Length: 78
Image 1 (tube, rainbow, N blue to C red):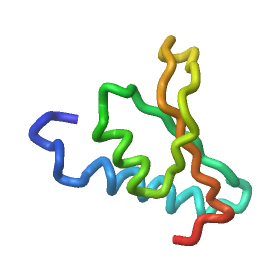
Image 2: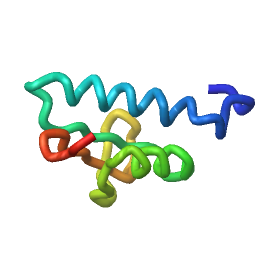
Image 3: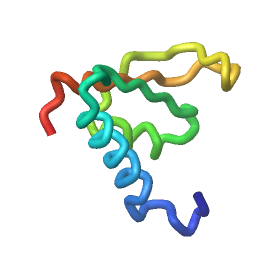
Image 4: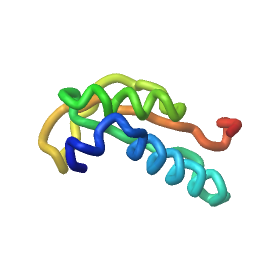
């Protein structure tokens, strides 16, 4: 996303739509997410839309340890 789009809520809106879509799917029970810790705004978005910080976890796809978040959508009331 271009820096001119930062801070306008687009990422929050997109993430919320994804969570809402998952909530409507009866087979999805858990969503997990991570972001590079140098992107504090991304981590803030995860917390804002209801993800719970579970600590750090190693990710093979990025080859680094990153903050790890979970959202149990069967418990979540939205």
